[in-house]
Structure formats: C-alpha cells, structure tokens
Length: 285
Image (cartoon, rainbow, N blue to C red; front, side, top):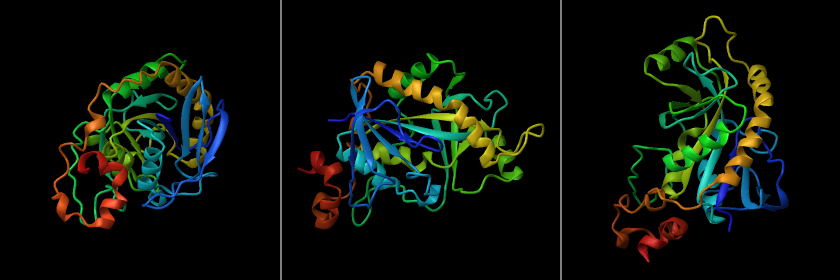
C-alpha cells in the first residue's frame, strides 16, 4: 500500500523521477479529486502524487474539491501527506525563494466545505496543532539538506482567493502576527486530520504579498518566476523526504477521531454511515 502522498500546488503538476507509474481514476462519495492520482516508485518507495489544481492548473482555490482529494488518498492507504504550496511572505525575514515549514494555520476562507461530517453525523475534531509535528520536522530536515534557506515555524493564513490581497488586508494580516499567506492549506489540513493522516506543508515563498513598499506587488508572472527557480529544490526535497521518512507514526494523528465523534451511532442515517465508512468503520464496527 502507498503510505506517502505528495499534493503538488502551483508550479508542481507532476513528480519527476517516479518509476512504474500507474494512473488511478478514483471517484469518492464526495465527487472526483482534482486529477487522476499518480502512483509510482520514488527512491524505492511507493508514493502517490496529486495535482491540487488539476492538470494544467484548471481549478481556482475555491473550486478545488478538497474532500474528494483527501478521501481518494485515504482510500489508497495513504497515512502521511506533504502539501506543496506557494505562499506570500508577511515577514521581512521570510524572503522570496525561501521555504517555510509552518506550524499554525489561520483559516480566513469563506466558501469551502471544511469537514467530512454532515448529513446527520457530527464530529468535533481537535485542531489546536493543525500540522503533524513529527512529519513537519522530517520535512524540515529534508529541505535543510538542500541548498534552500528554510524556516521552521510560522502561521500560515489561508485566504479565499483567487485574487491577491489589498494593501489594507496585507498590513492587517501582518498586524495580526501572520507569517505567510496562501489560498489552499485550509481546509486541506483539517480534512487530513479528520482522515487521521499526518499532514505537513512545504511552502515556497514567492513574493512579499503587497505590504512591502520597496518590492513590486505580487503578480502571477512573479510567482511563476520564483516557482521555476525553486522547482529543483522541491524535487530534491521530496526525494530526501522519501529517502529519510520514518514510517513509524509516533504522533496521535492516527487516532484523531477517537475523541471527536459525538453523534449517537444509532442515530446516524444509514446513507451517511455508508458514505463515511472509510473513516468510521474502526470506531463503529
């Protein structure tokens, strides 16, 4: 079974170096994922890859079916997920070209499904620490062994998009103490937690958003330029992650639902129970 998945963000739509490729077309109870999931061998280990925005970057952040993406990976047996994301910096010391492994999220999105649990089933997941510290440390060490300048920690604010921030918004986020800004980490991290998967983010800093008065405001052209520069680093970091990954899950991610389920099992509608079997069977059977 494939234990590790890489979710590629802007600029990373494939994973070079994968051998023995197999394309998986998966339909979930929540719809279709962004793209077919590519399963292959990297550094001798089975790895799954999913292009978050679809092949050719067809999906805006709001259009991404995050629930289908995470559910599809879960159905393949994935236990650990590394999300690759482009981000803007809200701090002087997190410069374009740097990589950040954040440890907190501030969800400022508005129009997204944030949970698998609805239609007669309620779960209150504990999300005080949204990223798996164990996996995040491994990702940090893997990136640190490349030529990149990498930072461990920081708060990642997720905005709805697809537009970039106004200067007023950007300065407000800085005043709130946010470190980096992007459009896709929420609700991806929350859903991974509900699916009891370890989740960490490798965030590429592409710009200073629009707050920095001596830098040009962020544009797609600027983002792509930095992403191209960082592609080799990302690919090497992913190889390092696969090579160095410790499969032992010493964290609590694998039992995140143990204290989250509140609905009386007898009151769960049969169709909802069937829809959530992949997540619930170990608790309800």
